Length: 127
Image (tube, rainbow, N blue to C red):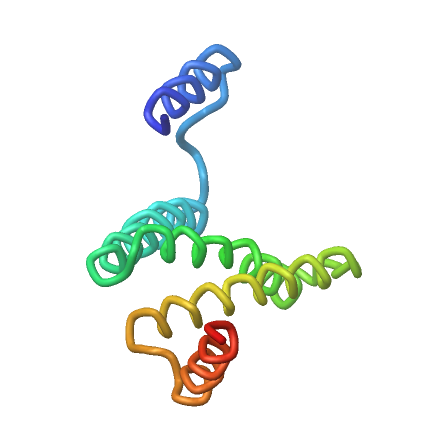
């Protein structure tokens, strides 16, 4: 989907006569950083994670991206944090935490305290 949208942006830029050159060296460097960091490093790390983790877990962890973006915008750009953003972020973080915790438990086994509780409950239910 990115390629057709890129072509559309190029065509719109040509139609509106927006120049592709004449920017400062710093701007071109920022363009390069925007291309390399999110695309190569970000997507490569997700592909690497898929080798070791389930796709559903990786998809859940991706939900943390807006949280980090919001924190970076707050720190770097002095963006305002609203209560809605804070509460929503905490809920998303809690969901990610619980999902990762459950994935670890199912992969490595539940802690002994939980296993004991479950086995006691099974004994009570079987009576």
